[in-house]
Amino acid sequence: MLPTLFLSHGSPDIAVAETPATAFLRDLAASLPRPRAIVVASAHFEATGRVLVTGDAQPETIHDFGGFAPELYAMRYPAPGDPALAQEIAAGLGAAGLAAGVATGRGFDHGAWVPLILAYPAADIPVLEVSVDPARDAAYHYRLGEALAGLAGRGVLVVGSGSLTHNLREAFPNLRAGRRQAEVPDWVEAFAAWMGERLAEGDVEALLDYRRRAPFARENHPTDEHLMPLYVALGASSGMGAGTSTMLHRSRDFGVLAMEAFAFSRAA
Image 1 (cartoon, rainbow, N blue to C red):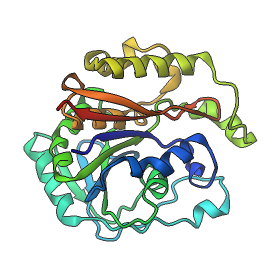
Image 2 (image 1 turned 90 degrees about the horizontal axis):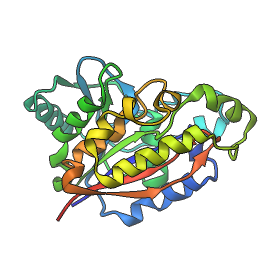
Image 3 (image 1 turned 60 degrees about the horizontal axis):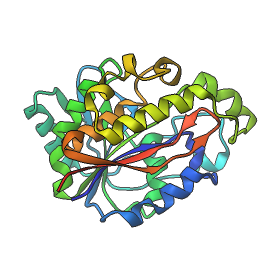
Image 4 (image 1 turned 45 degrees about the vertical axis):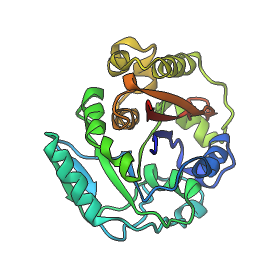
């Protein structure tokens, strides 16, 4: 049985930089059974009112960012899609009571291809993306994950790709100055520690209420979309109360980007 994963994808340039998160992602696939397909819930694929699943056979690579080195824009991730699986997933979401559809003409955003180009550089495993809804809360995205829970047993790796902390207003001065090892504020560490502890405890109730309960929630997530993929991965493991959480990686980038990665698995 494959676990489900939450990956903090951070700045797009981890694809060409040498950071602790880059090294972790390069080694990730060796620790997992080879999936037959990968489904990524990406913070950069937003849809309001329904869930969209990418359905093209040969998705393009989207360079949805600006201001980075030319070599990053030259990169392509030519993994195939899986239109039949996309239709199955959309139908399963609908059966679970979630409005869903298949999106065509929509390629891989950097929330998907940046971590995958490091973890699975051969690009020979079909990849699909699932959207997040910026208007919906953690409970909704947990429910969305629950609707994907059967995929792991079919050899499909479900990945939530976002960021454990994501305050770009605070990150940009360090990004522009190239200060990858900038001092980490206390408010970043407090929030990351709280999230890690609640995940280790399997405290889904507290996690779903993170806006009220977590320290410095607003400072770390002025908007929700980069944390919502964590809840998709959490729900897709069929609930932390019956499973385990493992922190796979912990590092900081540009001071305020917590690059944690977690694996969630059901209890035997």
